[in-house]
Image 1 (cartoon, one colour):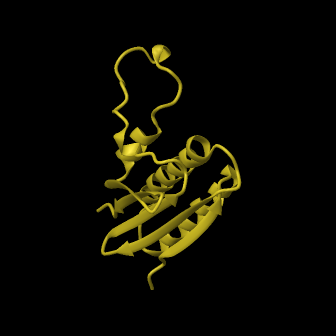
Image 2 (tube, helix red, strand yellow):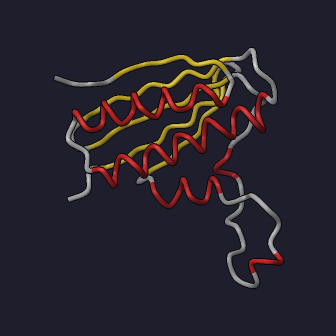
Length: 138
């Protein structure tokens, strides 16, 4: 059985644990390792948090998420109607130097890039669409 799912949530951080639990359940059912599941949860939580905090900036909006499984891959698509923003256009953070000299924040998308196998962004019909792919580890 394929545990793919779709879910629409409100733009409130309190919605994130439910998405994370649903993702864990589906990925476990499809045979992903605990490490792969944690990596994917981290990435999806970061993406949704960024949409809520930096995109919408207020409750009353929605975020649509689909999770599909094909072969050895989980494909998660996150769609929102916040102002157009391509998170993949952000430069890599400067990781050298003293940590005390760094401004707070700015590592979220970097972490998402590190834990996922593939990311892509499109903007269609006034919607930001970010697709994340995670391959089962051997």
